[in-house]
Amino acid sequence: MKIFDVHVHIFPDGIAEKAVSAIGNFYENFSMECDGRLETAIRVMDEAGVTRCCAHSVATTSHQVERINAFVMEAHRRYPERIVPFAAMHPALRDVRATAEAVIAAGFRGVKLHPEIQGFRIDAPDVLDMLAPFEGKLPILCHCGDYRYDNSSPARLKHVLRTFPRLTLICAHLGGWTVWREAARQLIGEDVYVDTSSALFALSPREAVDIIRGYGADRALYGTDFLMWSPVGELARFDRLDLTDDERERILWTNSQRLFPE
Figure 1 (cartoon, rainbow, N blue to C red):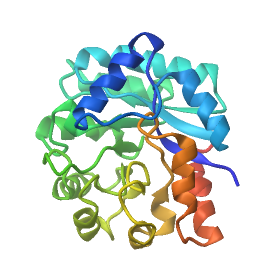
Figure 2: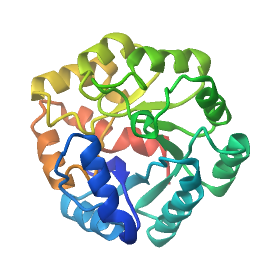
Figure 3: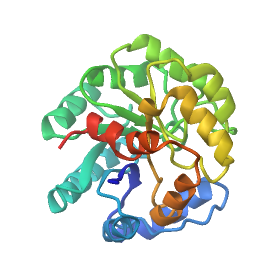
Figure 4: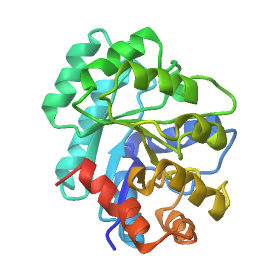
Protein backbone atom coordinates (compact mmCIF):
# COMPACT_ATOMS: atom_id res chain seq x y z
CA MET A 1 0.00 0.00 0.00
CA LYS A 2 1.37 3.43 -0.93
CA ILE A 3 1.88 6.00 1.83
CA PHE A 4 1.49 9.78 1.61
CA ASP A 5 2.76 11.78 4.60
CA VAL A 6 1.23 15.27 4.70
CA HIS A 7 3.21 16.58 7.67
CA VAL A 8 7.00 16.74 7.25
CA HIS A 9 9.18 19.59 8.56
CA ILE A 10 12.52 20.15 6.83
CA PHE A 11 15.34 22.61 7.46
CA PRO A 12 18.60 23.55 5.72
CA ASP A 13 21.57 21.66 7.14
CA GLY A 14 23.10 24.84 8.52
CA ILE A 15 20.19 25.65 10.83
CA ALA A 16 18.64 22.21 11.40
CA GLU A 17 20.27 21.67 14.80
CA LYS A 18 19.18 25.10 16.05
CA ALA A 19 15.63 24.58 14.71
CA VAL A 20 15.34 21.17 16.35
CA SER A 21 16.44 22.64 19.68
CA ALA A 22 13.98 25.53 19.43
CA ILE A 23 11.04 23.24 18.66
CA GLY A 24 12.00 20.93 21.51
CA ASN A 25 12.11 23.88 23.89
CA PHE A 26 8.71 25.11 22.72
CA TYR A 27 7.24 21.72 23.57
CA GLU A 28 8.75 21.79 27.07
CA ASN A 29 12.06 20.06 26.37
CA PHE A 30 10.58 17.39 24.13
CA SER A 31 13.25 15.11 22.67
CA MET A 32 13.03 14.96 18.87
CA GLU A 33 13.43 11.59 17.16
CA CYS A 34 14.99 12.97 13.93
CA ASP A 35 17.27 15.84 12.97
CA GLY A 36 15.07 17.70 10.45
CA ARG A 37 17.48 17.61 7.50
CA LEU A 38 16.10 16.98 4.02
CA GLU A 39 18.35 14.00 3.36
CA THR A 40 17.34 12.47 6.68
CA ALA A 41 13.69 12.90 5.73
CA ILE A 42 14.23 11.11 2.43
CA ARG A 43 16.17 8.29 4.10
CA VAL A 44 13.63 7.61 6.84
CA MET A 45 10.75 7.95 4.38
CA ASP A 46 12.40 5.16 2.40
CA GLU A 47 12.73 3.07 5.57
CA ALA A 48 9.02 3.53 6.33
CA GLY A 49 7.88 3.03 2.73
CA VAL A 50 6.58 6.59 2.31
CA THR A 51 6.07 7.45 -1.37
CA ARG A 52 5.26 11.19 -1.22
CA CYS A 53 5.16 13.87 1.44
CA CYS A 54 4.14 17.47 1.97
CA ALA A 55 7.29 19.27 3.13
CA HIS A 56 7.32 22.62 4.88
CA SER A 57 8.85 24.86 7.51
CA VAL A 58 7.41 27.58 9.73
CA ALA A 59 8.35 31.25 9.51
CA THR A 60 8.65 32.72 13.01
CA THR A 61 9.15 36.19 11.47
CA SER A 62 8.09 37.74 8.19
CA HIS A 63 11.74 38.08 7.16
CA GLN A 64 12.12 34.29 7.04
CA VAL A 65 9.33 33.68 4.53
CA GLU A 66 11.27 34.25 1.30
CA ARG A 67 14.27 32.20 2.44
CA ILE A 68 12.14 29.29 3.67
CA ASN A 69 10.08 29.18 0.51
CA ALA A 70 13.19 29.15 -1.66
CA PHE A 71 14.57 26.23 0.36
CA VAL A 72 11.36 24.18 0.20
CA MET A 73 10.96 24.75 -3.53
CA GLU A 74 14.57 23.69 -4.10
CA ALA A 75 13.84 20.50 -2.12
CA HIS A 76 10.93 19.88 -4.46
CA ARG A 77 13.17 20.39 -7.50
CA ARG A 78 15.66 17.88 -6.11
CA TYR A 79 12.96 15.31 -5.36
CA PRO A 80 10.00 16.22 -7.58
CA GLU A 81 8.30 12.85 -7.23
CA ARG A 82 8.69 12.76 -3.45
CA ILE A 83 8.31 16.32 -2.16
CA VAL A 84 5.05 18.27 -2.42
CA PRO A 85 6.09 21.86 -1.55
CA PHE A 86 4.19 23.88 1.06
CA ALA A 87 4.90 27.58 1.53
CA ALA A 88 5.52 29.54 4.69
CA MET A 89 3.52 32.71 5.33
CA HIS A 90 3.39 35.34 8.07
CA PRO A 91 0.78 38.08 8.64
CA ALA A 92 3.48 40.73 9.27
CA LEU A 93 4.67 40.59 5.66
CA ARG A 94 4.85 44.06 4.10
CA ASP A 95 2.56 43.04 1.22
CA VAL A 96 0.89 39.84 2.30
CA ARG A 97 -1.45 39.64 -0.70
CA ALA A 98 1.39 40.02 -3.20
CA THR A 99 3.35 37.32 -1.38
CA ALA A 100 0.34 35.03 -1.39
CA GLU A 101 -0.13 35.55 -5.11
CA ALA A 102 3.56 34.84 -5.68
CA VAL A 103 3.28 31.62 -3.67
CA ILE A 104 0.39 30.45 -5.83
CA ALA A 105 2.16 31.43 -9.06
CA ALA A 106 5.38 29.67 -8.00
CA GLY A 107 3.64 26.29 -7.85
CA PHE A 108 3.39 25.69 -4.14
CA ARG A 109 0.68 23.16 -3.34
CA GLY A 110 -0.32 24.42 0.10
CA VAL A 111 0.59 26.66 3.04
CA LYS A 112 1.78 25.62 6.50
CA LEU A 113 0.93 27.72 9.58
CA HIS A 114 1.66 27.24 13.27
CA PRO A 115 -0.22 29.99 15.14
CA GLU A 116 1.31 29.11 18.51
CA ILE A 117 4.94 29.22 17.40
CA GLN A 118 4.30 32.14 15.04
CA GLY A 119 2.48 34.07 17.73
CA PHE A 120 -0.85 34.99 16.19
CA ARG A 121 -4.51 34.07 16.52
CA ILE A 122 -5.71 32.18 13.48
CA ASP A 123 -8.84 34.34 13.22
CA ALA A 124 -7.23 37.73 13.88
CA PRO A 125 -8.13 40.33 11.22
CA ASP A 126 -4.62 40.49 9.72
CA VAL A 127 -4.44 36.68 9.59
CA LEU A 128 -7.81 36.50 7.85
CA ASP A 129 -6.44 38.98 5.31
CA MET A 130 -3.51 36.62 4.79
CA LEU A 131 -5.79 33.62 4.31
CA ALA A 132 -8.20 35.31 1.90
CA PRO A 133 -6.12 34.87 -1.30
CA PHE A 134 -5.86 31.13 -0.70
CA GLU A 135 -9.60 30.44 -0.53
CA GLY A 136 -10.41 28.07 -3.37
CA LYS A 137 -6.73 28.05 -4.42
CA LEU A 138 -4.42 26.28 -1.93
CA PRO A 139 -5.03 24.13 1.15
CA ILE A 140 -3.92 25.46 4.52
CA LEU A 141 -2.27 22.95 6.85
CA CYS A 142 -2.57 24.47 10.30
CA HIS A 143 -1.22 23.32 13.62
CA CYS A 144 -4.33 23.17 15.76
CA GLY A 145 -4.79 23.09 19.50
CA ASP A 146 -2.58 23.57 22.54
CA TYR A 147 -3.70 23.38 26.16
CA ARG A 148 -1.38 26.31 26.94
CA TYR A 149 -2.65 28.76 24.32
CA ASP A 150 -5.75 29.94 22.51
CA ASN A 151 -4.28 30.87 19.13
CA SER A 152 -5.70 27.91 17.19
CA SER A 153 -8.56 26.77 19.37
CA PRO A 154 -11.52 24.93 17.81
CA ALA A 155 -13.70 28.01 18.24
CA ARG A 156 -11.22 30.17 16.33
CA LEU A 157 -10.96 27.56 13.58
CA LYS A 158 -14.75 27.59 13.24
CA HIS A 159 -14.59 31.36 12.81
CA VAL A 160 -12.11 30.87 9.94
CA LEU A 161 -14.39 28.29 8.33
CA ARG A 162 -17.39 30.61 8.57
CA THR A 163 -15.37 33.45 7.05
CA PHE A 164 -14.00 31.35 4.18
CA PRO A 165 -16.44 28.57 3.31
CA ARG A 166 -14.39 27.54 0.24
CA LEU A 167 -11.08 27.32 2.12
CA THR A 168 -9.53 23.85 2.26
CA LEU A 169 -8.37 23.60 5.86
CA ILE A 170 -6.33 20.68 7.18
CA CYS A 171 -6.44 20.68 10.97
CA ALA A 172 -3.26 18.99 12.11
CA HIS A 173 -2.99 16.57 15.02
CA LEU A 174 -6.49 15.10 14.64
CA GLY A 175 -7.99 18.56 14.96
CA GLY A 176 -6.39 19.78 18.18
CA TRP A 177 -3.11 18.82 19.82
CA THR A 178 -3.76 17.97 23.51
CA VAL A 179 -7.39 19.13 23.12
CA TRP A 180 -8.54 16.29 20.89
CA ARG A 181 -11.94 15.73 22.46
CA GLU A 182 -12.88 19.41 22.53
CA ALA A 183 -11.78 19.74 18.91
CA ALA A 184 -13.86 16.72 17.93
CA ARG A 185 -16.88 18.13 19.77
CA GLN A 186 -16.68 21.41 17.88
CA LEU A 187 -15.23 20.46 14.50
CA ILE A 188 -16.79 17.11 13.59
CA GLY A 189 -19.32 17.85 10.88
CA GLU A 190 -17.43 20.90 9.65
CA ASP A 191 -15.88 21.01 6.19
CA VAL A 192 -12.35 20.19 7.39
CA TYR A 193 -9.66 17.60 6.98
CA VAL A 194 -7.53 16.33 9.86
CA ASP A 195 -4.13 14.69 9.87
CA THR A 196 -2.93 11.99 12.28
CA SER A 197 0.38 13.62 13.21
CA SER A 198 1.43 14.03 16.86
CA ALA A 199 -1.77 12.43 18.10
CA LEU A 200 -1.31 8.67 18.03
CA PHE A 201 1.44 8.84 20.67
CA ALA A 202 -1.05 10.17 23.23
CA LEU A 203 -4.37 8.56 22.28
CA SER A 204 -5.27 4.92 22.70
CA PRO A 205 -5.89 3.09 19.42
CA ARG A 206 -9.60 2.99 20.21
CA GLU A 207 -9.76 6.73 20.97
CA ALA A 208 -7.90 7.53 17.76
CA VAL A 209 -10.20 5.36 15.66
CA ASP A 210 -13.29 6.92 17.25
CA ILE A 211 -12.03 10.42 16.45
CA ILE A 212 -11.02 9.48 12.90
CA ARG A 213 -14.40 7.93 12.21
CA GLY A 214 -16.10 10.94 13.76
CA TYR A 215 -14.52 13.22 11.17
CA GLY A 216 -14.85 10.48 8.53
CA ALA A 217 -12.17 8.26 7.02
CA ASP A 218 -12.46 10.26 3.80
CA ARG A 219 -11.46 13.39 5.78
CA ALA A 220 -8.41 11.93 7.55
CA LEU A 221 -4.86 12.21 6.20
CA TYR A 222 -1.79 10.37 7.39
CA GLY A 223 0.98 12.55 8.83
CA THR A 224 4.05 11.90 10.96
CA ASP A 225 5.23 15.36 12.10
CA PHE A 226 8.78 14.42 11.12
CA LEU A 227 11.18 15.55 12.84
CA MET A 228 9.31 15.06 16.10
CA TRP A 229 8.66 11.41 15.33
CA SER A 230 10.33 8.73 13.26
CA PRO A 231 8.20 7.76 10.25
CA VAL A 232 8.92 4.11 11.06
CA GLY A 233 7.59 4.47 14.60
CA GLU A 234 4.56 6.49 13.52
CA LEU A 235 3.62 3.87 10.94
CA ALA A 236 3.80 1.22 13.66
CA ARG A 237 1.39 3.29 15.76
CA PHE A 238 -0.95 3.69 12.80
CA ASP A 239 -0.83 -0.05 12.09
CA ARG A 240 -2.20 -0.69 15.60
CA LEU A 241 -5.44 1.12 14.75
CA ASP A 242 -8.40 -1.19 14.18
CA LEU A 243 -9.34 0.24 10.79
CA THR A 244 -10.71 -1.54 7.75
CA ASP A 245 -8.45 -2.02 4.73
CA ASP A 246 -10.52 0.55 2.86
CA GLU A 247 -10.13 3.11 5.67
CA ARG A 248 -6.39 2.49 5.80
CA GLU A 249 -5.98 3.02 2.08
CA ARG A 250 -7.97 6.25 2.16
CA ILE A 251 -6.00 7.68 5.09
CA LEU A 252 -2.55 6.51 4.01
CA TRP A 253 -2.86 7.43 0.34
CA THR A 254 -6.12 8.08 -1.49
CA ASN A 255 -7.31 11.18 0.38
CA SER A 256 -3.98 13.00 0.14
CA GLN A 257 -3.41 11.94 -3.45
CA ARG A 258 -6.81 13.40 -4.31
CA LEU A 259 -5.88 16.72 -2.69
CA PHE A 260 -2.42 16.77 -4.25
CA PRO A 261 -2.52 14.86 -7.53
CA GLU A 262 0.74 14.29 -9.37
